[in-house]
Every structure is written in C-alpha cells, then in structure tokens.
Length: 487
Ligand SMILES: [Zn+2]
Image (cartoon, rainbow, N blue to C red):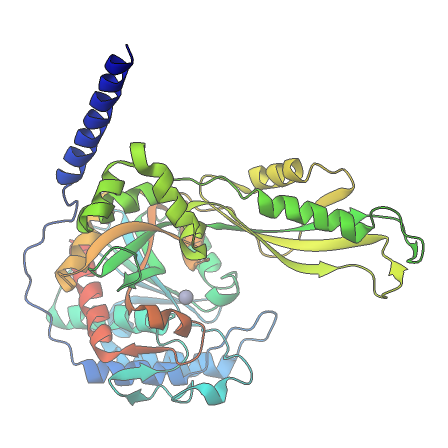
C-alpha cells in the first residue's frame, strides 16, 4: 500500500516537473517583430545645444511658490526661435498663460487624435547641493558627451525630442492622417492644476476624443531589471494613486508622573505597528502580469521556469519581488508613516497624538478601500482616521496592451532601438498623464530615457544629465512614433 502511494507521489512530482519544464521551454517572445528602418539622420550636438539652452531657462516649480514669469518667457522665446516651422504651421494655443497646446491638423480630422505630452517645469535644486554638481545645475553645459542640468531627463529631453521630431517631419513634407496634439504643461511637478488640468478641460470643451496619450513616466532600464540582460523599455499602463491619512489617537492629558497604562503616544504606536505588520495584499495581475509575460521569455532559464509557471512558483516570485522596496511597491499599495506629533513638553501627557501615513495606491485598490482597510487593521476606536487635505488621487485606469496604440508605441521603440525589449509597467509616482484620463481610450507613460542603475539618483537629484547619444534616440523614437501613430 505504502509502496503504491509512494509510486503515485513520484509520478505526480514527475508530471508537475515535466509540465513546468515544457511550459518554460515553449515560452516564446511576445516582442513586436519590426523590419529594420534607416536610422533618421540627427545632428546630436545641435540638439544638445538646444536642450542646453532650454535647461538654462530656470522654469522651476516650487510648492506654493510664485511662477517665474521671466524664465517661462525665456523658454518660450527659445522654443519659437529653435522650431520655426512648428510655431508657424501648427495651431498654437497658450493655456493658463504658460501652458502650450500645439495642434497639427490631420488630413483625416475625423479620426481620433493622438496627444504627446511633456512638461516645461523642473524641480528645484536642493539648497546646499549646488556645489556638489559636476557642472552648474542650470548651465545646460555640454561636457563629456552629456548635457548637464536640472531637467535634462525630467522632462526637457522629452519636450525637445518631441519638438525636434515634429520640426524635422514638417521640413520633410510629412502629412499626418490623424490630428496630432502636443501638450506641454508648466506645473507638472506641483500637481498640474494650472497646466495639464486646464489643457484637458479645454480639449473636453472642444469635444475632442483622443485615441491615446503618451506622457513621460517609465524609461528604458539597462541593468535594472533583475535577471534581464537586455535593456527594457517599460511603458506605464497606469499610475498609482496617492493618499495621506492622519491617525489621531486620543488619550488623557496631565502630568507624566502618574501616567495611565497607555498614553496617546502608546495607543498610536501600537496602531502604527499593526499597520506595518500587515502590509496591503500583493497583486500579481494587471500591469505586473503583463510585465512578467513580456520579460519572462527574454530571461535566462531559471527565470523562464518561474515566469512560465506562476501557477506553481508564484509564491517564490512574489517573495522575491516583496523583498526589495522598488519591486514591492509595484505589486501592492504601500504604507509609509512619515510624520509624528504629540506633546510639546517631555513631562506633559499629550491629550492626543497624530501620525501621518502616506499611501501609494495600487490600481487594484482605491481610496475608499484603503481607508476601510486601515480602520479594520487598526481595530481601535481610540484612533480616528482622517483624510489629510491637499493632494490626493485615485490610481489611474489600466491602459490596454491589445490596442493599436500599444502596438504603435512598441513598434516605434524597436524601430528606433532594435535591441530594446518592450514591456508594460506601473508608474509609482504621479505624472500629468492622469489628467487626460477620460479624454482618451488609453494613456501610456514612457520616455526613451536610457537609465542605468547609477543614473536613478540623478533624476530630481544631483548631476542630472542626458547623453548626446540618448538625445538622438529621443528624436528617432518620437519621429517613428509620430509617423506610425498618425498614418
Ligand atoms: Zn516629469
């Protein structure tokens, strides 16, 4: 009897292994096959000089601060001088004074239009770090094959890349079939209310329906995705939502010489510990599933084995993703306690204690479900959960990977850079892209910025820079994209 049972178990194990191996061995690439295209001739140094000039216009966004009118006037004058065909031949609208909406009317204006977005503003340089830069942060200097300065990657390379490609296409006599819209907000870094929000409202009033929107968001990662040797263009299908909650614990005030068993601080600390011990559940579907399906076939055998057999090894994969903050954040709503306050004096019991917790909401959750779960996990009536005023947003809808637009974006990336693998992804931060939700069937988030592990700290950090080679790729990508999308 035992023998037969053992034989049965052995047979079962053999069958599982055989199925797993077969699935791994037959896992085939989902990459769009593209025919080689003649690389567009681009004068990289000339593009670099124009980007450098754009960087030297200090279009800095500061929370609650005044917009620097002179800096935006300087940038606009520069763009108009650099791209004379664009500003003469496209419809030019200034929205909210410094937002730009350019319309290239298609030969078939009844087709849904395509909108390419970028933003004109940049984040400030952290006070005291100016000296740490290898080149002054607003010099826009060309040195060692790079253009240096704040905004080189985020997001003036996109702005310049889109305009360079458009100027070139106009010069070549290209006629788009679909209408092409170029939307450049001026306050993305502080929420986009005066820029992208107004541009989207204007398009809505005009009854314009978009086929798709492409804004910044994810990039080409080189050596960043574990187990993948090829560079990967990750195209964001969605961006996470944003919510901050204040947890207010009530206690009894008084002298600290005769404290109750639990003070407000103790009650709050216990609640925070519970929240940290019970992270939100992981979601391996949606953008994550799309990413595994696209990257798995391009990886080595052990990863192929795992990604082809998530039914069996899903737990192992989930564990690996959860082990690092960067990948953990892509599969769940994250919980980050960031601020604390209680008594103002060491020997006074606080009548209340407050913690602020910041949540980045996965597309499978929403603001209401996050609040509901927080209250359930806290399970303590003495802790009040309050929504903090200020910026918050729902996660954006997940865009399709079955659409013509998805195919067009993937094709354009691989025509401009054939060695790059294309995969869907989830944007962890916020972009202007979310403001166009509802106007378009799909909103994608990608710019062809070539990012190696050592480059990630440069974005919003010190020594932001973009290589001249990368700039050439920007122009080639947007050139292919406009041709493919508009025809
Ligand atoms: Zn940006």
